[in-house]
Image (cartoon, helix red, strand yellow):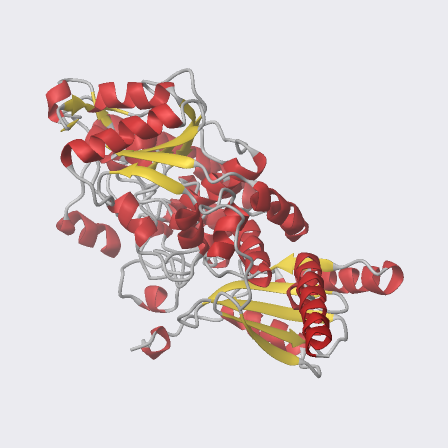
Length: 371
Length: 140
């Protein structure tokens, strides 16, 4: 494989960096094709992506982790090789990430301060985790509260990417009764562009796809919740390969009945696909192997606000309490209009469930499955 | 143990996306024949059942060319039974398919020598020839 060495010792553009890593132009073209595919862009955009990435400066990225479980970082770093997410992640200049960096203590914090100073106004700030407001001492890094660190880093950022449902919407730490007073990044920062990449965790290529989009075409088009439409523009249900079973009113009633074995729709087992906007059904997980519904479990709705308080992962959306499962069958059998009605029911059920903070037990689950 | 070894057999299901896709390929082939327009269809985001992938394979059939490139993992280029219609499959190091495109053109884009590489090749060849001539002049 023949490669051109960059003129400078340290490659300055993404294209130079990739070739310095031994990636040929054919490889670069493949990379751009896969990138366009992951970003749901038309294949005709591939040459434009290639040209833009070739010249894009390697961005300085500062990654701050607050009230989180490190699942978002794990999602990204565990991706297969060579993956486009891995290649993009390698192509950025990750100047601070306290989980991944070798430096610790004062050295690490000096690296963060230096990166902010050297790239002021131009770096990308990535945040995972929510921010506690009840007491700054609930979560600190090097003695600095999450709130203060976020405000300081956000001031010089070109854009902020809130990675994971915790940073985007408060996530699990914000679940009722929200003991730390957790809030999202957008609840605090009001004067910077914020891109919410929700999910628990988000799909890795969605994280890096957003970075790539920012490098090539600037800020992506966002939905009403601040999420990039390229990845969150359609709900799981609409792109689900099990949807034809929903249309025919064929549902699994338990996780081991004949319907489940035949791959029927998981709606009645609590699947939140109809109200969840994410790319799982198309991009999938683990290098495109599968996604939860394909593996036999309903969607939890993890990319939606307050998903933890939806009212039970195994409670069907349109039958929040005491409503016969026949309602679902009737709605499915009568087509699209009824589907819209079910969607409205789902939204109401979701709101009610959040208000009541319903829980579900194994006994309830079994009863519901047998009803 | 591979995924295929897990004894789960799902019911045959059709998403209804196969027929529109075949017409899209047909339209792209018409554009290539009439105007030389290169087309590409990304199959990655289309809800497709395994059965429909099989039906697509059967419809396209096999042509004369089947090439595997080693570039960021393997990439397999297969011309279909319809000249000008190519399957382009990208795989990672583990053999997992990470991209699947239908390209409609004389050759898939990734197979063509890239313009910048040609320019660099020309520069290198010019330098090598000049050095050889210089060496020959010195020995003469």
